[in-house]
Image 1 (cartoon, rainbow, N blue to C red):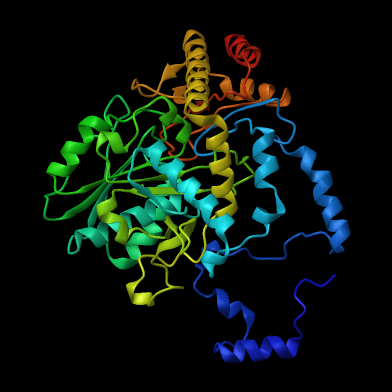
Image 2: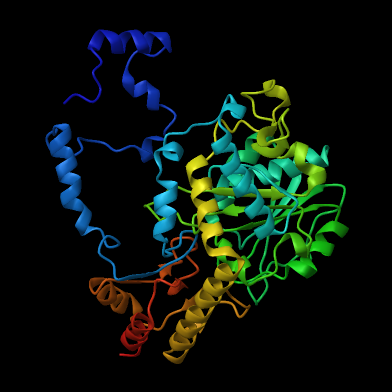
Length: 444
């Protein structure tokens, strides 16, 4: 099967159109020392069905495919998904629906989005939520761009060093080409963000914090909000684990101006990097600068309840220079899944499940500390925490992996200074027997 069915003549025509003589010139911007020299040892080409069979054979070799338990967080979390979520979100009416460009004709889709917005706003303690963004990282970048629009002439944002490294990279990708300045705020000994070095009020547009942060530490949002506002900035908070707000105070009740983060935990299984769900909410006074779109409730000429696309400041609907974002679509099915999941649990179920996550993580933390591990930071945590493990843990982790237990996320890949440091996460999917087995292995 030919995957690139272009003839030599067609390739020459395309190269001529872009002013190149040969294909290698397309990669001239890559430094010489970064280029691979020689032929890559690739197997012979396969037909589509042979290739599919090849991937099916490789699947069981992946560590996570046959894992008994995954004790890794860092932005993607394993939670049980009730069958009602799969059943409702998998209905063909929802799966086949696309962005409603004639929105009032898609009342079912609009109502589902409206329910999602309502549940999201309640969870985050904010006045209005949009119809979702691609993922948590792009949601944070969009939130900071929104803050810069609101601040008008200010061009500086401060970002906590405890925000997920991938999120910070996406922020740089979004902001640096526009000439915006990004300041990274250090951490104190508890693992919380040190706000004592904020720039002057006439420069700072926003401060971004994550709680619980990348190291699992819960930020003191109540104290942070007045500090940020006194510095003349908006407080932007993000999250990777929304379950935390089943126990913690919502960001809105703590004084946040814009709240965003990843909603994958709400009914969306991890899948090697996707799909995700960018949750996004703000105060009503800022709604016209919020990216994406907002569905509202109304009545028709006969007085019957109906739903409309109230705000849609996307470049598909208005002039590009007036648009608040170039988001061309949203994770509609993911948002619907999250809405079904939140509605299925309700407030009581969310609290009970969050408490179970907290208790299980505390049980593992105490077991590891008793086995010789040391906390990386001593601040309070929710369902994940960072520790430095005793000597020999790499080999113990390998043995656990062979038994189907994925024990912790190595942090030295994010920071070389964090040798022997691991981020552990425990959700309701991890049994007490698994935790005991892990701790016993570490003690051996």
